[in-house]
Length: 228
Ligand code: 6GU
Image (cartoon, rainbow, N blue to C red; front, side, top):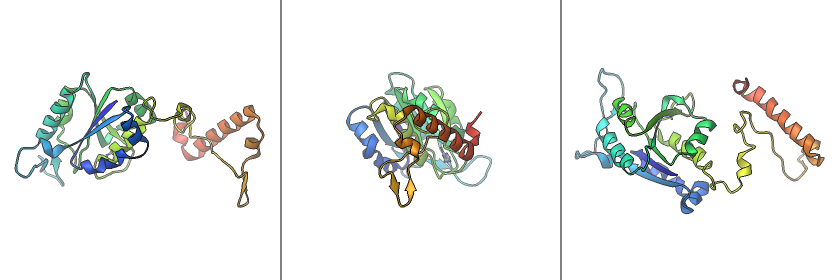
């Protein structure tokens, strides 16, 4: 999979060099290219924003640099890309979104700052690929960069081969619509706190049943909105 990120803060993405996704990059499973939006300006001040028509607070990102950046990146694509704009005004990003995108050949992620991007950019992008405005949740970040990073990690770890043991993707939170069951390791007793007996019993059927009950109970208390 190839991911192109467009941002006015390319340095934000330096951390992708390390950890899980860093190794996936080295192994050629995941190619992430970060582009500075200001490279697509032509004025002396490399301007990417301007005041909003109709008035109001803050600045809006100008359409021209975005148009040139999208042209340059979509032209490289063998198939129409999925073009993602992280936005608190978007649809909610979920594990299902991550799964869907992990099967795509090419993602372009456009990170907006300030009060947003000129709306016409989304309409233009839709002529180049599938456009998705996606939010991490109901709170506001200063820009799309941190959200893009979260999306790249959630998607990247689902690309086949990125996570060493694919079985570890099966029993995790949100993979079956429930929260994950609690986990324990040695020692069996620690500071007066004991591992539940059933996990020491060696009885696989009872362990599986207990874990499922724990998933249901946790989901009921912490995330009732996930239950039907
Ligand atoms: Cl995707 N962007 C911004 N700016 N704020 C957010 C968000 C995205 N998701 C939650 N808050």
